[in-house]
Image (cartoon, rainbow, N blue to C red; front, side):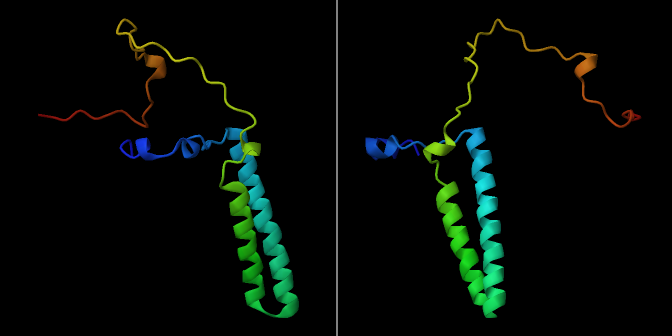
Length: 116
């Protein structure tokens, strides 16, 4: 992928491609609401007209609309960016955290020793 990046125009590189966690939650909620509304309306319309194809067409329209609204990282999904901690320097003087009895994973039973 790195060999392609020099050929990509700056206007394409500047397009934001991220969505914050709150935006992901809202996008998922919008997707579910839109699909459910179109499913209920489609079922009602298909039931009244007695054409199953009307149900599927309306549901498909809901999928297309919800996809356009939720798959792209619109600015409404990037309003609350996550505040990251500053990066630590990587020096070899910092020891790795020691494993103590309090933070070892607990097994269901004792391990059996193999006999020689």
